Image (cartoon, rainbow, N blue to C red):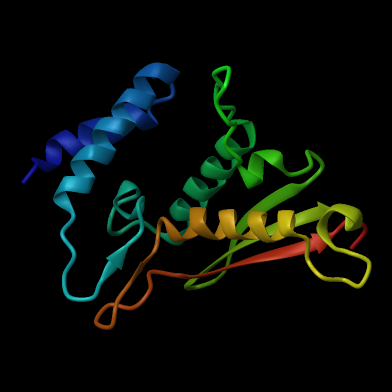
Amino acid sequence: MVAASRIQRLRSLIEHPRTGAAERAAAQRMLDRIVATSVRPVGDRSYGDRYQRVGRHAGLSRIADMIREDIALARVFAEAVVAGELATRNAVRDAPASLTYTVDTPFDAGIRITVAGVPRAWGWDEIGVESEALRQLRSELTDIMNAYNRDGTDIGQRFHGRVEVRAAGE
């Protein structure tokens, strides 16, 4: 078992405003490795990849902050492409720049991600069916949100999440 003080020191380093980007990324990788080896499933419980990142007793507002940060990072994330290799797709990064993302906690046990300003031509076809790009965006945002959640028959979900999409002009 890893000492809690080491985990706390890494979290402090990650959250400190004067920590450089490279040092923050290295500390985050170390923390992710420690947490991945220290979390053991119990029964049919399942935990998201980032469940332990915010701490077991974190409030929904802290989780919403972390989701906002993950979305902001996904919007600017650009993977270096080596000649001859395929570029990876990222639905959040590849979405139109005019989209706005809002993460809020409208209920006691709920987190809502709202995507506003979706151009009709990009998000829906002529008869109103969601485009493949919008479905992928919705799926990617759901995955980001669920990375902080848990579930199981004996514990239930940490929060109920949903992704709402609004067309431009609504």
